[in-house]
Length: 376
Image 1 (tube, rainbow, N blue to C red):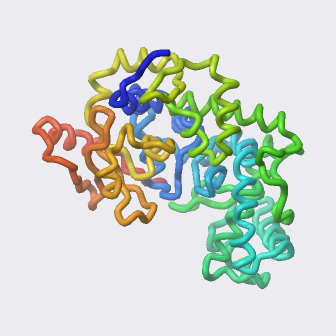
Image 2: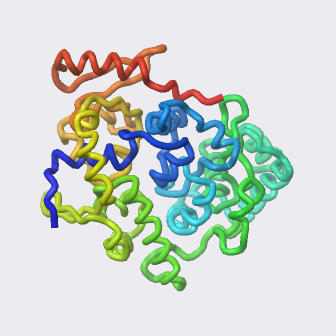
């Protein structure tokens, strides 16, 4: 097994993720990465644009065409995901979150009857339309006697989305509309999709699944997709990305191991697309240069273990106060060397150490070329 120096991991991941060399459309970038964390839509749009061949942004077109949607497919967190991937990933990953959130539903006073009302409201409002805003849906819930304050409305929307009823699709102004999955993504509406919202429980996708073989195969397919866009990565990284049980993640990696190159990083096996080594060799200087990556970028969020690219003593500066809000990062030689935030039409950088003249010049160039991330 080839040994890969820990300091090289970030450089290889930049290549695997398509930061360099860039290729393809927004839809192709999302498909390459599998899913892009997107609770901050502007940051997610920036992440996608930074990986497209022209550096531009056709994400709005991909959303309009249903090639990309936004939902809660994994970790109870919003992601951009390919329209043709949504239902199978919900079926594989999201049910665990739905089951785990039963206690929160009870705290909010949401029972099966309430979920059924929310489902009916969504179907009545959205059937035959190109979608409605979050505010429109929440107003419909209120008219039906379903309170939306104190996070209750959010949880109803989350549940309808995580169980495959709703997703966020085209833009209405600068806001994404909620649409019915069965209408917006008709190819995904065949039998076998996720349970409907009225079924509040459902068997947890754990080691005792009745349909175990199908779930194992689905996990292996998703692991292969993950590795194409994230390797080198470990089974623990995949488990962290999906919130699948570690045992299932290990079996998924074992099932696809023959498709990938195994490299050892600090004594742990990581798998990587065999093409990545060639990309790194061909683009090493550019890959090791300075890159501005937005908050919540897959370069950090795509892994359970981030120590190879972010020193522990700097982690709090990326997520100040531990509030879960990730700042944009300055990445040099595959390592996070600072953070940045948007400031008007420019950016404000916070270096972990005094930058060199070359880094300062590179920052100016990168900032000038940074996509706006604005949609609509």
